[in-house]
Image 1: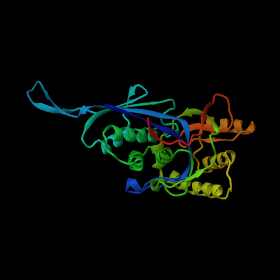
Image 2: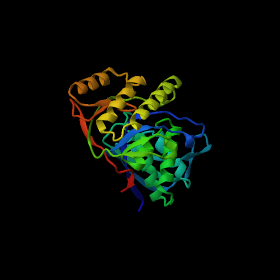
Image 3: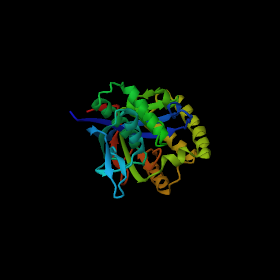
Length: 295
């Protein structure tokens, strides 16, 4: 078979911190987040070994034109750094591949679509090229690709395990505590994108985020049996105290949900809202405990 298919769930980050190291494999984040029933479907097709083609120019000089891998996101060809990195790390024999990614969720709005795409691509490539790497090895490669491209720090770990995860240790350790929340319904609305790279690369913002994340995780640790409503409340406090909650539309929506006896917070990192109660213009997701997998 000349193709392989895989799926990785989207991840909603509620709380996070930033741990940077010169070695990308030792970088990551602590925090709180959960995977949902929607995510990315990836199909990787092998189109033959990459070859250098000789092209004759009018002046008589010849040049080499190296064919490139193709990445298609929702039927549109795009430049996708994290996915390209995964391909380069795994595709040592330079097989030419086409990666087709499909999802119902937006890129750059806090759903971990970059991490899910990198992780699902690693699974499919491993199968297609018969690399025989373990799932955790593939997840580490996807995590490193995210860190190197500043598109995420902890999504891949949650997407690898699936479920509602509490990470007190940096995500690069692949250690997490699973919280028993169940397959609750979640409602969300997207107002716009928020570039992860700009946030996690700013030292002043990083200090505030890390300080407030530590407080938030400490509060959660004191809860004997945290419920979804409790976790969303702590998430909202983190969004406010860290200074990340800046969008007036997001603020207004959260206040309206609070008035209607719901609980809501900002999705990290995106100008998006998630809530345990349906609200105007919202769409529904379900918390899912299934991680990434081959199809």
